[in-house]
Structure formats: C-alpha cells, structure tokens
Image: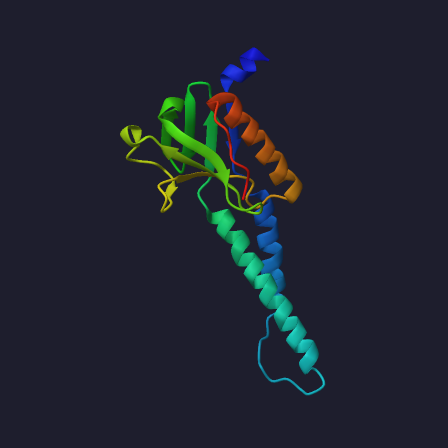
Length: 172
C-alpha cells in the first residue's frame, strides 16, 4: 500500500458516454426536426410536440459534442506535487507553491480549481483562469453518469487531501 501511495493517483477525462449520447441525440434531432412548415389543423399539435422534442435533442447533442471536442486532460497527484496535462501542454507544480486547491462548481459540472502562490505562479498554465485568480485545472466527471461522477469526486477529494495535505471545500 505504501508503494502505491508513492506512485501517485492519476485521473483522466473520458469521452465514451458523450460520444454515444451525442450520436443518438443528433440522429433523433435530424429525424424529428421539420423539413417544411406547412401543417394542417389536425396535425399541428403533433408536429409542435415533435418539433419541441427534436429541439431538446438538438440542444443535448450540441452539449454532448462540446464535451467530445474538448481537449483531453489528465491530472496526476503525487507526494511531491500535482501535474496537469492537456493537449500536449504540461504543468507540474510542487505542493508548497499551491496556495489553495478545491473542487468547485455545481454537482453536475465540478472542477478542480487551484490558486498558486504569487511568487510561484506559472506562466504557461494549460488551464483557463477565472476572475478570482484560480485556474480551472481538471473537469471532474463531465459527461459521466451521476453515480460515476460522485465516485470520481470522492476519489479525487481523498487524493488531494492525502497527497496535498489540503482541505477541500465542499462542492457548491
């Protein structure tokens, strides 16, 4: 067990579920959206209902494909520090340079966010920066089921507390 802790914990993003949802909902949207707008009085309610269902499928497909097209990310936590890899860019930060790290956001779209010490702030962070100075380092379970996302949240919270010795705020 001790050797396993020294190796660190690694977390990666997955695209399997968003691909399946995106393909199915895109095909449904294509099948349900209207080809023309000439409706009879008798078929108006049915056509309106099918158009609304097709629109919901289209919105769901766009949201799923946005997750599919997002750059893959990997976060590795070790006793020495944390490493974030995203589309060929890599950032390694020792724990003493991390001011605060927590899981932030709502339960449907949680993120690992970190504030770095001002003297140690990296110049080429492969992550988006928020207005409060925090970096969005890693999307936790985006596109996964509620059960799987909850499991990833618990594993990631335990790894951050275990390796970084930091307290993680609860998800908002």
